[in-house]
Image (cartoon, rainbow, N blue to C red; front, side, top):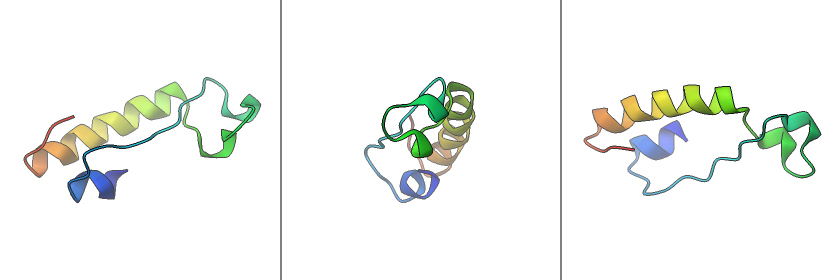
Length: 54
C-alpha cells in the first residue's frame, strides 16, 4: 500500500477485520482496526510528500 501511494495509485483495497484469526475468508491478509489506523497515518504522510492526499 505504501509503495502504491508513493507511485500515484488512485485506489487501494485493504481488508480490515476486528479479529482476523476468526475471519471466514482472507483473515491472514486482514488488518485489525488499530493496524489499519496506523497504516492510514503513514499513508497520509506518504501521499502528502508526493503532492497527493487521502
